[in-house]
Image (cartoon, rainbow, N blue to C red; front, side, top):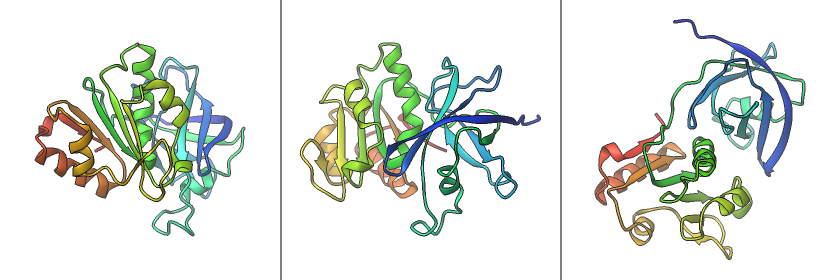
Length: 230
């Protein structure tokens, strides 16, 4: 099967946190995706167009444009990264990206608890927006861990989407009023989750995801109710 490629122009970029930008780009004709899906993206510049990276759509399929919400990982601070997100953050309207076909990452399987760490929130953004649009947010909760308050992506939107008891924002590197302190670990889950038989959606740094999978299973979650990015 041929993997189609599409060239789209950037229409707009803006910061949503100090190191995360939203990119609004042209939507190719007849381009269809589901909330939670991603695509491979490359910058259409000679030095970069072979450097594909996966990014999740944070727009909805019915939108007239595509949106990606992307954190920059500068190579000076993150030497394991190869500069793609850093270069993306330098792009301006009119610059072009190369997209491929959408593919599945995280599929919504019914109400449950979304657990995200940092930029791991991105696969959940479109799912949560879709649930809100369809008046189906009730019964879902979001546990979102970040280092500091200024790292929280789309905080205002999430506070407007979820009730206060269904949105738990936790900080690991500072203490602030209105946030929980510490990591999302066994004690945190035991305290804030009454039913471990529901669905859990987990995305974040690989070590966090692996730890949470093991913790959730020990607390009684079934393997087939833990959904994570593969």
